[in-house]
Image (cartoon, rainbow, N blue to C red; front, side):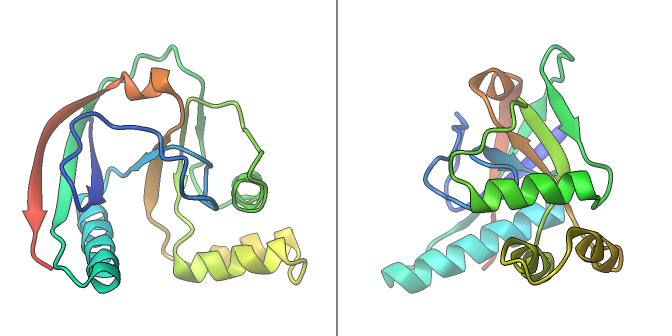
Length: 164
């Protein structure tokens, strides 16, 4: 299976990112199986870095072949559910939370979804109401490689530049 990672660099050797707190499934190397989504991630990242540095950054999509071994511990969320929301809330609000999975596959809490998640974190909205609200959102997929063992299943194929 091909997976995509959008950023500003070619990444032949993926690494788990531990510098970005508040990610949906915790510290991981995040990919998607949706090429267009990775392109949007790359363009967004390039624009943010360009604005901060004053220099023009390239938007790069890295492509990997994922050889699923079936020996790793995976958690798959087919839709936004209470179980999914619990993990996202834990990972976004508790830096020390570890879920124990090598790979987590599920929906991405984009800006609209993120607002709903933040209401839950702040205690403004019940989880049940949040999940009901999220049923109406178009939510994209993400695949988080959370351990070194999971990264070993990724083989770099190529990268390409996206126009910003």
